Amino acid sequence: MLIELKDVSYLYSRDTVYEVRALDHVNLAVEEGRFIGVIGHTGSGKSTLIQHMNGLMKPTEGHVFFEGEDIWAEKYDLRKLRTSVGLVFQYPENQLFETDVLTDVMFGPKNKGLSETEARERAVSALKDVGVGEKHFKTSPFELSGGQKRRVAIAGVLAMDPKVLILDEPTAGLDPRGRDEILGRIQRLREERGITVILVSHSMEDVAEYADRLIVVNNGKIPYDGSPREVFSRYEELEGMGLAAPEITYVMHELRRRGFPVDVTADTVAEAKESILKELKGGRKRA
Amino acid sequence: MLKDITLGQYYPSDSILHKLDPRVKFIGTLVFIIALFLVRGPVGYAFATAVLAALILLSRVPVKFMLKGMKAILLILIVTMLFNMLLTPGEPLFSFWILTVTKEGLVTAVRMALRLIYLVIGSSIMTLTTTPNQLTDGMEALFSPLKKLHVPVHEIAMMMSIALRFIPILMEETDKIMKAQIARGADFESGNFIRRIKNMIPLLVPLFVSAFRRANDLAMAMEARCYHGGEGRTQMKPLIYAGRDRTAYFLIVLFLAGAVVLGILGL
Ligand SMILES: Nc1ncnc2c1ncn2[C@@H]1O[C@H](COP(=O)(O)OP(=O)(O)OP(=O)(O)O)[C@@H](O)[C@H]1O
Ligand SMILES: [Mg+2]
Image (cartoon, rainbow over all chains, first blue to last red; front, side, top):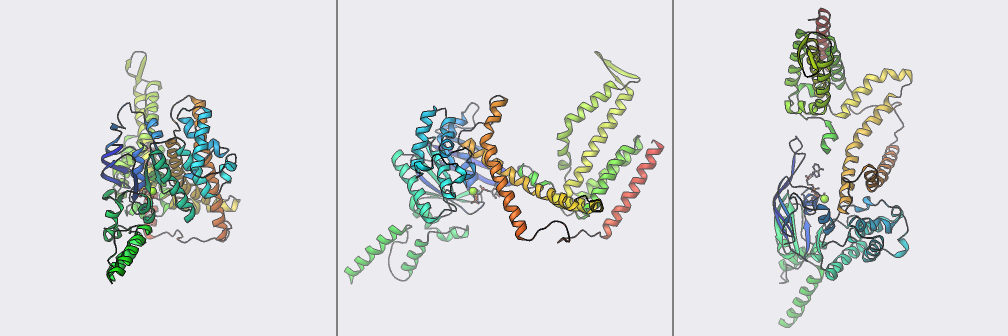
């Protein structure tokens, strides 16, 4: 098992009037090579959860394991863990600080102990991976547009060549094209390098399209954990948690209700299209 | 830690002390501190202790929160007590190695310690029962006579409340940026002094950038709503004294009188 959380609880502002139980006895295992989607309404505990996975937050109760080792054990090398588990925060563009884009992306690899030239190579390839052209390498990160900054920030984490890439709402505030491009590139990276991806998102469409496992967070607990199809089949319960299924799932349910026996578990437009076409062709044959 | 600073150390409750006008609480605290320096003898301290106990009960804030401020002054407390005990000349009580504790020293030490502790608890009662915003409003009202002397009271109060409002935001921002850089392998803990300062750059640059951006946004938002300083500006919730505030002032005067009498008598 790559990452394992055992009975993890986290309390903010512990022992004060403002105490919040952000995680409540969470158990979770992350297998290698997966693309995991994490959904949950605002304040449900998603960001808190993922920050436990690379040792940025220490559980109030419970244990976190990476490749079988307890990361809060006495002599555990947390810095090494953090280069293996790359975490891209919500609005990561706020972390840019160097005088130019390339140097900023080199920050991570250099902290990992790589030489100047190696770090530069990594940075160049990471920037290419997220689609930042060479003409921007020497510009100040503060002169870029929001979407470009976001890409540079993601490259800054990718350049460390992590085994696990955790992204906290990487597409918030981006236009649809930018969103598809970033997620598409991450998907490709996962296929090429076999990295494990954990994606926190408020877009049901995005997680349905890319994730092969979906984790639902609600009030610091994980009520559902399964394939997107399984999870979205409980769309009525999801709605009770302030979530929903992808739009297309509702269309399919409505079609079924009106007498078309389509596959209601289809959660991406492509799947739905296939199911509807099949139904139409089959239906014609039957008629 | 974040929320601690957000609200000062405000402890929400609806006790009579919470409802009092911030001006009363401010003056009351001031009087209490003055009284602490007026009284000298055991009777005086017993009087102050009784008043403090009554206030703690009235505030309905758990004593645990009152004592939190104690941690911060523990070191000062120990050092003052030690120095007073050892360095005050007078009748020797007992000696130890080259150090001698005098009777006078012991008395002064205990008096100083009590003063410090009561001072901290007394002002804690004010900050625990008053939000920072109420406090700045109260101060603005109290100091407004200074406007005649061209002291920019309103501007200072506005700056204070904006600063108070921004501290938690910047703290949160610092926390976020720090975590993001740690996730990129930054190291804020090890190394010598120069190294550490250099390691702060990845934190400070984004922090300043965001602070300036926020300040800019705020200025713009204030101007968009026609803010133009204190002239002719009214408050949504102006401070108005209620009956309980007058009672409180009366009690404060009584307390001060009592402290003055006890102080003069040296009891
Ligand atoms: N620094 C903090 N201090 C106190 N409470 C906090 C802090 N950060 C988060 N919380 C609380 O912990 C809970 C979980 O917060 P978290 O940030 O994990 O939510 P989230 O699922 O990431 O939400 P979002 O979708 O808005 O990013 C919330 O109730 C929040 O109010
Ligand atoms: Mg979040």
